[in-house]
Image 1 (cartoon, rainbow, N blue to C red):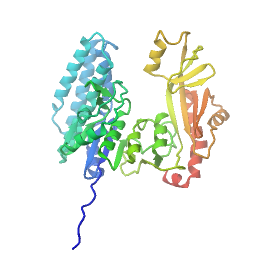
Image 2 (image 1 turned 30 degrees about the horizontal axis):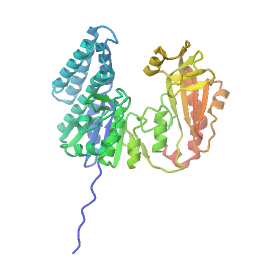
Image 3 (image 1 turned 120 degrees about the horizontal axis):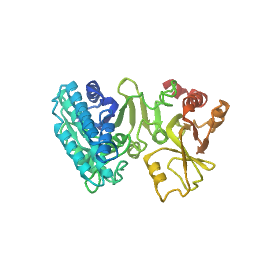
Image 4 (image 1 turned 135 degrees about the vertical axis):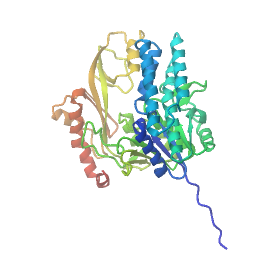
Length: 440
């Protein structure tokens, strides 16, 4: 008599949908189809706010906090948020009043903020959280309407606890086990809010731009996922921004480290820290296009030495700071002589406005951009030489390690500079790699 052994348990698949995928009712239905068709027997869904909603909510916060114009604008902004979500519900055939409780709560929160003498960053995070919270409920209701039982879940109710760095919070270590246990108790398909967490004092926090990617990775690690799928508007991670370089190619496979380097240097496909939880647990990720689900996308996993891919990541809206400020060292900046080039940010603006900041006047000049060239292993850092030969002025230049080169140019020169470097460096490197060239 032979003994039968039960099959090994299926590892969950985590599917993350960004705002562009949830832009309208058709997009939400498409996401539901992908959950059914690509999620396997135990999917977990992570969602961002619907496209454009976070910007609307940020505008509401700014008006309520007194940072922008008159209170009547707040009423108009709140109306746009309400209409945006009721339109989505109507397109899906769902009850138009389904989210009224959340919309009323948003109104109360904004009124409380207006009454305070000194609104805080925590207030802003509370307002921004409504985008993901309403999105999770819409997607869960749509799945249920399709006959797939689903439950909306706020990530902070799962035990996702972060530090108190509002606007750029980072999850605290040691929360994965609690999140995993909480998800096991959810009925049907969990549809979890990305981007939001809660600090130790119970205040809502947000994880920064593309923070839902980080949420999905943390949840993937917590449930021991077989794969985390990031559903985007592009066919994987490309060798360059296709808006700048029409000939940009998809990279079919990337190592965790190289993919994170792309993100850190400005390729805005993934959150720069999103891959670390997956790398720690050796969980593969895949970046896929929701408009072309048959495309293989980019698979991210441990590939070992010699698997380096190459590409260009661009950063716009850089500034030149001049006026002899030798101690000024903004994050991510490049120094060239007595000038500093850096990405413009609210943090940099606060530093320059701080009375304890630079003791000598600092002149700010806008209109610059930075290219980060990730060379193949066989290339030396020669991008600056190629740009000079093409009569493109190189304003700052730095080599980081054997394969990364940072170059600052005028923003008006960015498209031509990106195309020049891509043609002379990236395409040549890919053509030397038969496997990569064939898959691209």
